[in-house]
Image (spheres, rainbow, N blue to C red):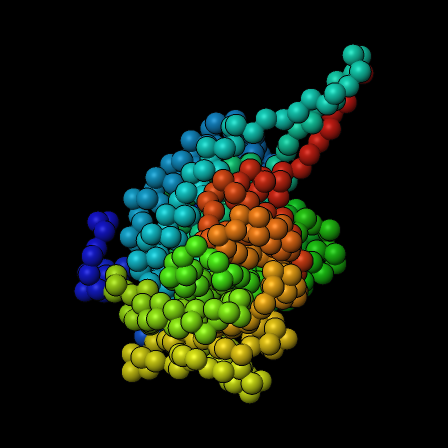
Length: 498
């Protein structure tokens, strides 16, 4: 599909789009065994995109059984890494060829601006598949430093059957962060997309088959977390469970693993990331632009969103005005308009949650500086203005709890030590940023921050070469980079005495 440039072009494409709606099990698109479906509603205008198969325990059992059979057959797991690479590179090529279709599904399904569905989501997802494929035949095993009459071989083997439960905010990209290394390592995978955004995952499964992935290697089960998600988490024949989503659900999945077969559980959970602005930041306008983007990009529905803005007291009032000005370029608009930067909130439940936090912030004594209102109601869609709160105490709910919306809490500090203390005073530890021209201060602060990613004089940097994940209740394990393969392989020691 050719890249379309206008709102009208995208709207015309949406009308002719074939929306996937079935589960994919053992290479076959099929309804849920119960026949149950759920409505997939677009947050752009409230219309129903599809009646999607609502999978449950029988579908999980069937998918896991087929995945196990496929894994044990060796049709994928026993392929040479270079052969798996070739097929996955073909999948990446198909994703590029269908980039407009995948981006459109993403935007219609969860409301993000089409400009970012194309430039961020589809591009990053494709990059994840391609990078992981290219890496798999370049990861070497080891020989232990033994005595002359012994050989200790340390090898990696695929874990077997992987269940991947992915979130609704970056449906395709988060799926590919898991699928890239999991498939490249030789595993069979059951992908459970969120019921809020299942469409791109189903289409990805179809493209994987077209690329030559054997049936049963990648299965896609749309449905709800408390039904098919729970069934996969408790399944006795799932070897590894990977998840991105809320901390509350992540904790429950650990319980399910303990109740079942002690399956490996790797979790990327919530965040409440501090963005620390020192008075000596090298470019305050650039810092303000980044602070605005850090809270408004993807409507604030980002686990690494810079929702706590820690500003040195001497520049606080001035800097808030810079951020408020920068947020004017992040006002909600039609997600299919290529000029739009801030789209629709994924569904009514999430919109209500954001509004409740805005109300709670005011009740707790924070000062509403700008935003906070639901807008574009006549469209039938779900839109809210990016919001800034001043006079926030770090113990307020808007400073401690993950809102997953464009709500910014401003917290002042006077010293580096105070900034670090406030930044670390949270159950989360996913990301943080530091802005200062003092290289020693930058490194001292970054080293002291309890977070998996720390950015200096920018926000949300990194690519597939760098690991991504969190400290504390933001989870365990890492996506991206060669470290991601640790989640999808087992280490085996084979010891020989000569």
